[in-house]
Length: 340
Image 1: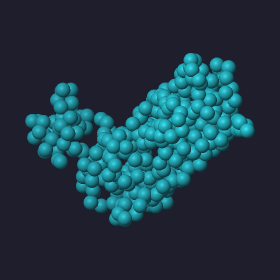
Image 2: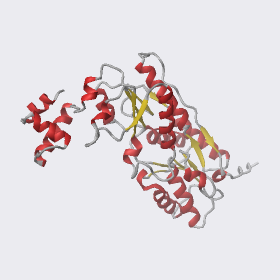
Image 3: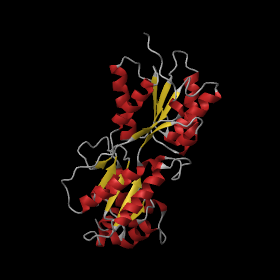
């Protein structure tokens, strides 16, 4: 698509389209909005570098971290996974002769046109039917993802590990420590981490005759979301869960603080495991047992896999990343003695 196509569809001059998309000149707000919508509909990018150099290698990789697009901040307090991931990806890219450009959601307005001037993209934790994938496909930009798009079963160029294995490992650990009623607290983003973890938990509960105890908490609520869940937990009228698997570290830290504020003990009354290690889980009292998502290993693998695709290696299988459970004080409960 060219600027001529946009002008023809919008019924305006090429100059008006240029001014509208670049924020220059005097263009009525309604006209500007109409042109922006037409450009998006046609998949037009105003970036000249991206258009003219698409056939040659630029030496730049793009990185979009989708969970940060939905959080309240691009530097959420206490969440060091994304900083570690981006840093390791940048260093690996440099070692391989590329620069790395971190970009916020490129489908939103006012994203610099240079966002499309890359050789390929890494998308971390895509959402269901992620529009960023659609955008990159329209521009024929190669991409790999960290984690799968749950609504694109045919897309297999994703790096990582299934959350099913993590969930089952956490449940096994809690059961070994004496837990009998395990609850799950997930986020609300429509990604594989949340969905696969919940599915694995529900399947386990069904197989073991436990009523599924599943709650969801918006990722943007952070520690306060965990505290709110703690109030629900301690006020439960029926049998109370004695262990909780919280996918996000911020929720887990808030839950631990809320449970203890209500006069309960961690881990004696409630054991807590976080699905993502973070500053909050390490600094909590007691420190919280967490899944190490291996951000540095994952980042290096993603960069390497993307470059292999850029080099034309279409037969290579995506790497799987091994994760470990970091056992800390929040699950330091001795197993209950047997009935024998």
